Image (spheres, rainbow, N blue to C red):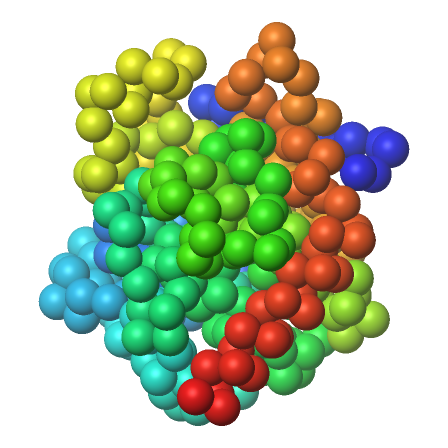
Length: 309
């Protein structure tokens, strides 16, 4: 955890449009995964409003096309299929990408799903939220480096706090499946990815940060039950526009040039998590460099094993 916390003029009530007011992204190219619903839509809208050419990387092409029409600037919006639980879909997206990439927002995700596995046998939440974005981002590394100054945003969640990585069983093969714990671990993984990717790629002009968007009432929570919510602290829900603000800040705010390997919430770098503030902060296990390096290798090993199968 960096000793000096970075703060900005924005806060939990700031919106994505507040963050990009006055920002010029003309000539920059951005990819937002999961940009057909929720905060992904508002992230894409804000980046396009600042002049970026935005690719909506989505599972549902029709929903993506509706989003593009809603945003309204058809000249700056592309819709491309991407299923992060399908390694073939990711490979096709990467192979089709040409030219530099300035902004990658790894926004898509699944949450609290019933137990399910990909064809490789990977637990679905870890496979989608972490491994899918890991494959996508490493596959686009050359395009990000070609931009000269690129930013990657990896979406995490406060759910990471109770879920340090269990490296010996990331896919819940020997443990009883717990859908909330599995979600939390996948979001610990996205935070750790930012730490290690930034360490590896900073010299390429690529900065990588993690963002906690906060609690937003979107279809991401469709698998949560009243019983699940009863066991959680009371959330102060944000609008999708507010939920997108931290992602957009990390993707576009000029004053964050060169800043990487950090975890942000409510548009500011998060403080260390404390039990008395259960919905705020970042846990040590989500910023630990050794764990980040170990996760990177575990991810490579899983992908290599799948390739040999």
